[in-house]
Figure 1 (cartoon, rainbow, N blue to C red):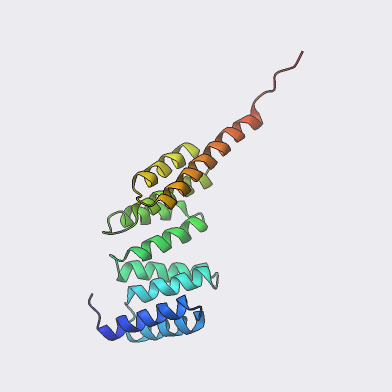
Figure 2: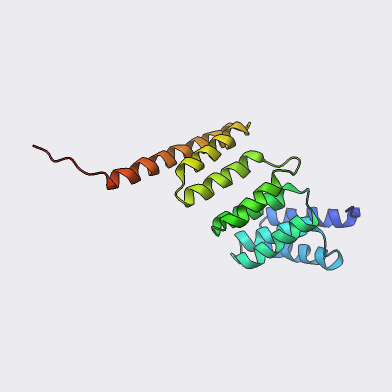
Length: 175
């Protein structure tokens, strides 16, 4: 859907307020955008982010992220932010569905999506699958800082995997 420049300008102003630390001013501006254009997905994404990260109201955050994806299905940030929230809430089944949709969005950060899947599997204790997803994240990244973080994730999984098994390994009697 195409929007007039006024709505897009208002969105940019709201994002600047948020960046400047004026959360309430940005929130108010986003809500005003949605009064005039309830289907403006980018405003829903930004409100979802506010509820997720500032107010820690995950139900409202999820509501707005879902609307962001519904009304702006080609806007990558809505998918990524929703994936971050779903992982935080340990909603694995929903995360898998959203990631599969997100992988079809042009311009999305594919490495971040694989990282989120890796985190999901790691939370579940499936370290082998987590490591496989982190390796896919590395393969899809061109950012050295991201790659180092993903390598750290793999190292952490190896530590958990082998550390866990050592807890249950029978000790050999010493003579």
